[in-house]
Length: 203
Length: 197
Image (cartoon, rainbow over all chains, first blue to last red; front, side, top):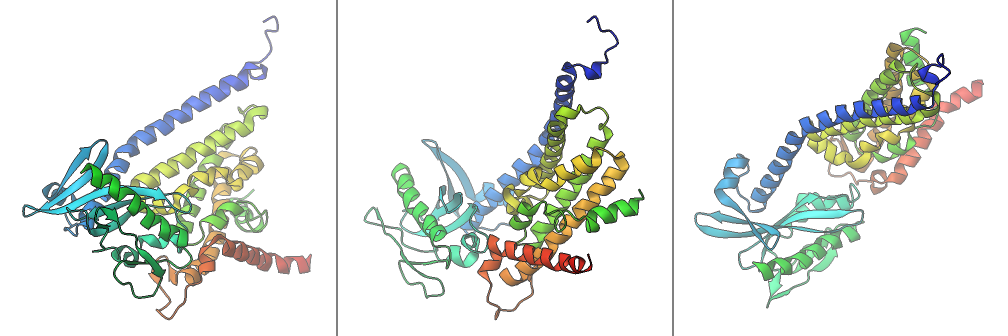
């Protein structure tokens, strides 16, 4: 205090004040950007999800919002979310989110089954972090399509698939696994087994 | 210094990747697809230019002892802006880049330019320097991605180039090939100079 000529810049407080001001400034800018993009991000997430639910039931995906409210109803039981698809007053089946750990991270998917839970209608991968070009190929159509119409439950128990090498013809009860991505292929079938009974017991 | 000179120096003669061997981690990670490399490159150019500008603007006020903290804060803010922008407007690309956009923060090039250039030069020169360094980095990314995507997927920017006869090289999709490609590239570019010097 007695050194009146000492500049504020040279005091010990200056770096602290400087850092504080600049932090508040940049956090303010970021918060604004975040708020501005929040709505767009959420809308996109919803649209993608709705489109996926429609596509697993092979319903038209051209007018997503309209078709979604026409065919699909969202339900919730004991904190488990699921979707029911109804077309021409016939129940097409259930669709529910499943997840499991892949090689690098969590794989999230949607599984659609017939109303009696016996058959798989379709599977769609929502998010995954598998190796691009190897495990990442679980998002490719040929891989997902092979699950269509597969018998999943016999006598209230999950019937395990037989894993066969890629490029071999897939028979009843068999599933191709991706060459070089055994862990990712196994993760997908494991998460189907694990989740289907959980939902079957509740619905 | 002239603008053109600053640009050429930071983009080519003192290229961050092949001359200073900086920013290698991201060059290895995102170069399996051309599109990812281009977006990553644009993100880095944006961050370099604006963080350079901002740091240069306040360079006379930043206390010397905490300058790195300030630089990191500014860089991180711009990176988050890029990340949010991609998430909101180009969600598909944002998804395929995964965590790598956020990791631009750790890209040594940006911190390097902030320390070496923006802290000492005018804001406008810093923008040019940032764009130059970013362009140099993007070029390297695109060259590596060109080879990796062509051999690994048989495509370029997602367009099919190779026919059905092409057997995809799994190695090109995985990280090790990026090591090979990057070292070959650095080798080729630096060899003639060594002989002269």
